[in-house]
Length: 275
Image 1: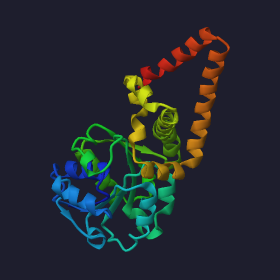
Image 2 (image 1 turned 135 degrees about the vertical axis):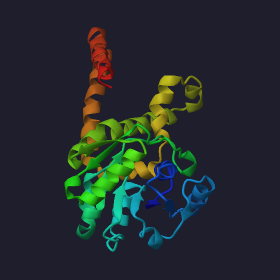
Image 3 (image 1 turned 90 degrees about the vertical axis):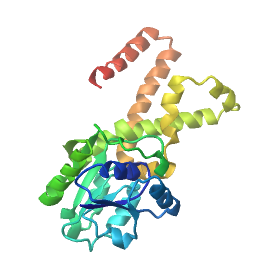
Image 4 (image 1 turned 30 degrees about the horizontal axis):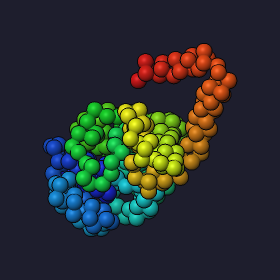
């Protein structure tokens, strides 16, 4: 099979490296509007060849490894795709993307969210094992053609992913808590420190806790703005619930209620028995 990857950053570049190691794929072609990304992807051997948008549409499988708003825009340009071309998006939101798929290519399309990534972005952030032993969520597969669904599960399995099927609305609700809310908190924490009179002095004392919490704030603002926009309702609900818990903490500290504060913290530690 010939695979085309639109978007040659962390996700697309890592996918290109992983696919080149499988016997299923004969060639990996790439396309990116950013010419520097194209040049870097070739130098780093993330893909075999750079082609035009029209050429990449002729691939057997087409991965959309681009921001979620760009996925919606690109899908509208794929209405003349061949019947046997499989389109797979890698977006972090699912419901809005699925609703945007043109009807005549809905059976070609498989909505996927690989639960993998780092705070880094761009071709130089790509690495071969990004997807290894990670979960990929496939949504609304009842409306994907059997041929395309089977091909998708096969290719994700070959790069070492574990496959989970989920309703898109359910996916976006869960993603708002486990992925989107942590990014919002990290950006807020980073801005809280930057907003101080002497942030450099504060950061001199920064240890593991701050580094871990603020790491996600290194992520691409453009990409995450699109995600927050598409999953606005769920994200706002998760932020409100987080604010309630933070208010509980604040009130217990303010009222010297340290016994209940300790119980509140203890309850939080039980989460790691599940993880």
